[in-house]
Each structure stands twice: as structure tokens, then as C-alpha cells.
Amino acid sequence: MIIIMLGAQGTGKGTVAGILSKKNGWIQLSTGDLFRENISKGTELGIEADKYISKGCLVPDDITISMVKTKLEELKDEKGIILDGFPRTLEQAKRLDEILAGKGEKVDWVINLETPRDEIIDRMLNRRVCPQCKATFNLKLHPPKIEGICDNCGSKLVIRDDDSDSEAIRKRLEIYDTQTKPLIDFYNKKGIVIVEEISERINRFADEACEDFMKHIKE
Ligand code: AMP
Image 1 (cartoon, rainbow, N blue to C red):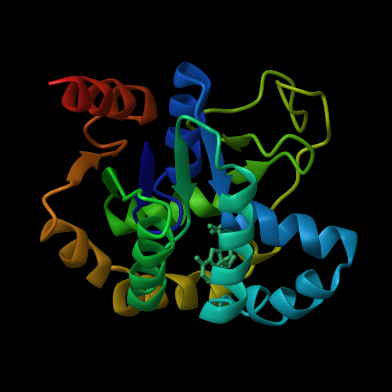
Image 2 (cartoon, rainbow, N blue to C red; image 1 turned 180 degrees about the vertical axis):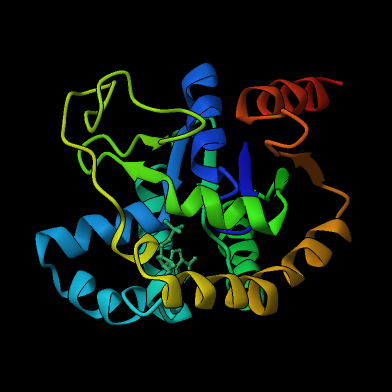
């Protein structure tokens, strides 16, 4: 099964994908994490990707698609894959369809997370991530048990570079609106989008979104 997480930055795509993968034994494939891993290892891909990521821009389609294609090949025997942060452009979505069709597969579900814009910005400013196991925390909504330390692996939590720069945050949201939002329409036409609202205002968070999604796909 192939599932795509859609939604603006900071809506909780990684958290929802993490819960679903843990519960169902699915693999969470986050392009952001893959890029960050390459950046921290100083690989050629990381050096190239960092030029875009540090400014809040998207990494060019060709680089991103070829990285995902390789990864999907490695994961070909997995029963479920959640794509977290990919596709982000119409070109990526079309190429993904082609890659999957070549293997007799398709995108089964798209989870579209919706969160009010003011909450999104607050969530990004309060986000802390574990560079080791990639767990995500929120200082207000889901703080770590020990300040600054990952609950899962005990590593020191960090602020993502692109979350500490308000210009990069603004740019990423603008890119989401212009380049990624049109994907909702692309997948709506296939009838596979499930919208999940995540908002502090209505007290609805990742756990509830996951439960609702699981109910939906079992129907
Ligand atoms: P994320 O962790 O998903 O917010 O991704 C962090 C950054 O990695 C994004 O702001 C982009 O610069 C880059 N990135 C992640 N996924 C993609 C993608 N599918 N296409 C292009 N750039 C991406």
C-alpha cells in the first residue's frame, strides 16, 4: 500500500506518518529527513540539496525524484510505504505515478492534513526534532518528558535550521500554496484523498487523525 501525506509544513505530516507506520509496520519515507541525513553526512547530494533547503526553496524535481526512485527500489518488498513530504510538485506526482505503474502499483491513499495558518507558524516555531531517530516534539503541545532530550533515544533535540528563520518559513508556506496545494486537486480527481483536520482550537491532534484514517480505509 502506498500512502501520501499532504499538508503544509508544520501540520504534523511526520507525526501522523510516524504513528501510522509504528501501528501498521509500514515504512515512513520522509524526503526532508533523507535530505537532512545527506546534509549532515556531507554527501554530494546533501551539499547540493542544502543550497535550496537553507533558503526554504524546494530541491529541484530531478534530484528529488531520482532519490525517491532509488529508495522505492530498496523498499520494494515492504507491505506499506508512507511518503512523507513527497510529492510536492505536480511534476513529482506525475513521475511518481509512472514509477509506480512500472511496478504494477499505484498511490492508494492521500492524507491531506489541514491546520489554520496561524497555528502552523506557531507549530514550526515550537518544533524540536531528534537528529538521531527523527522523532518530532512540540514544546507546547507535545513536549519531551525531559527538556531538550528525545523521549525515544535520549539524543539532544535540535531546532531545524529552516524553522529558525522566519524568511525561510514564509517562503516555504508560499511554495506550499503555489506548488504543492494543486496536488490536492490532482489526487481528488482520483477519489483517494482523505482530509484530516488537525487543530489546537478544536482539540484535534495526530492520534485522532490516524484513528479516523484507519477507520476510513477499513470501510
Ligand atoms: P520537510 O522536512 O518535509 O519540511 O522538508 C524540508 C525541506 O526539504 C523542504 O523545505 C525542501 O527544501 C526539501 N524537500 C523535502 N521534500 C521535498 C520534495 N518532495 N521536493 C523538493 N524539496 C523537498
